[in-house]
Every structure is written in C-alpha cells, then in structure tokens.
Image (cartoon, rainbow, N blue to C red; front, side, top):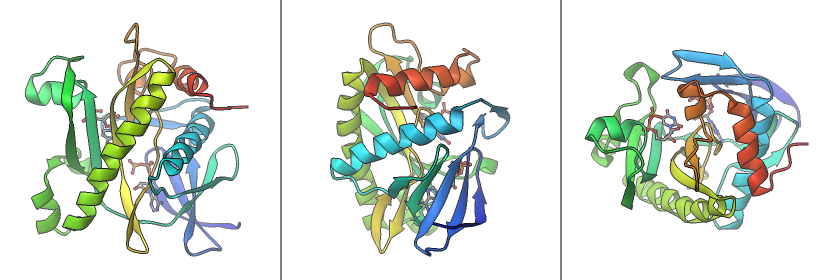
Length: 237
Ligand code: ADP
Ligand code: UDP
C-alpha cells in the first residue's frame, strides 16, 4: 500500500491518500490537545499506544456487528481505513455525569445517568463544537435524518458492547464521542476510539484513566492509557 498525499492534518492524527482510492492511512501522532487546541503537548509513545488501542476496540466492535472503517494495522503509528464521507458531527453518550454536562446543566460529577443520554455536537473548533440537535443537522444539511437515526442506534450499540468490555477490566465507561461517515451509502463508524475521546474511571477508586489526566494536569497520561489497554488485553509490544 503506497502512502501518497496528506489530505487532513487534524489535532492528533494525519490522514493520507493511498494508491487505492477507497482507502486512507491514518497516522496517529504523539500530539495531544485539549480545550479546542489551546493546550497542546507532544507525549512520547502516545501515537503508538492510541493506534494499537484503537485497532483493538475497532475489531471488538466489528465483531459485535458495528460497521467500522478499520481495515488493518500497518505500522506502530499507522492504520489503513476505508475512506468515508464524514458527517461533521460528534455523537456523545453519557453513562455518568462528567465534563461539559456538569457545567451546562449543573449536575454533580459522578452521578449515574439513567437512561444514558445522547447528544450531538457540531465539529467546529472555531465555534467550540457547539451542541446541536437533529433539526439543525437536517436544516443546515450536516446529516440526513436516516443517517442520524442509524448513527444514534450504533452509538448506543457501542455503549452496550464497550460498557461490558471495560467492566471486564474493572473500569467504568463514563462517556465517549464517536464520529460516523458514509461508505457506499452505509453509515460506518470512523475516526478513533481511544482514551483521548472517552472517559474511563477505575471502578473501585474512580481514578481517572483518560484524557482528563491531560486536561487536569494529573500526569502519567500515556502510562494510564497503556494501563487501560493492558487491562483489556491489548498488546503494545
Ligand atoms: P480533529 O479533527 O479533532 O482535529 P484528528 O486529529 O483526529 O481530529 O483528525 C482526524 C480527522 O480525520 C478528522 O477530521 C476525522 O473526521 C477524519 N477522519 C477520521 N476517519 C476518517 C475516514 N475513515 N475517512 C475520512 N476522514 C476521516
Ligand atoms: N470529546 C471528544 N472530542 C471533543 C469533545 C468531546 O472526544 O471535541 C469526548 C470527551 O473526551 C468526553 C466526551 O466526548 O469523553 C464528552 O465530552 P464533554 O462534552 O464532557 O466535553 P469536555 O468536557 O471533554 O470538553
């Protein structure tokens, strides 16, 4: 597979075309960003850890019947994926209150959210990823109704699969963000699932094991991501 031109340079990953028009190479950089890119640091080994972590999770999801863009690991920091026509929206499910919902709705961090909530955000750093609803997607052409319906169903299916998976490693899946795109008209999970885009707490101590360690300067960011992976059986060698 020949790596050609860089077409996206995101905050944490770079995306390249290949000699196959339907395939892209995602390169997981060591860059870590928070607060819409206002806090950025290079963390040694983070690209490798997230690349392998993501491959493991995508394979689990695919096996559980969630269509994903994952094709195969190419190297320590590269993965081959299907080229999707991405919807510019983020789908967020929350099982426990943390992060923006606490500020927005005045709810206390750590309370169980029953049933789990589903929220949509517009992917737009300049506007600080504002919260939107389905009507905005339809009216402004960001996504079609049938595609949102499927993305929502798949996002909840991911919750069923991953809540159980993280429990096997004695961890709570607090919340997470997913991005979907279209491949031949089908809604497919794209981007990544790593501790950069979700919140994970130790079930007993409620210690934060995800990107909040970076946001809140708690230290041991990549080390924690690796602990999470190892508890699930991810091989980082
Ligand atoms: P950000 O967009 O938040 O800065 P990244 O650094 O992770 O994030 O950039 C990755 C980019 O690649 C994002 O814009 C994402 O929507 C896009 N992307 C992810 N998967 C695919 C895919 N399969 N096909 C096309 N684009 C993708
Ligand atoms: N999230 C993300 N990218 C974003 C916004 C949120 O991956 O641009 C993830 C975040 O890591 C968390 C979940 O989505 O797991 C909910 O995030 P929240 O709305 O609480 O915002 P935050 O407090 O992270 O700014």
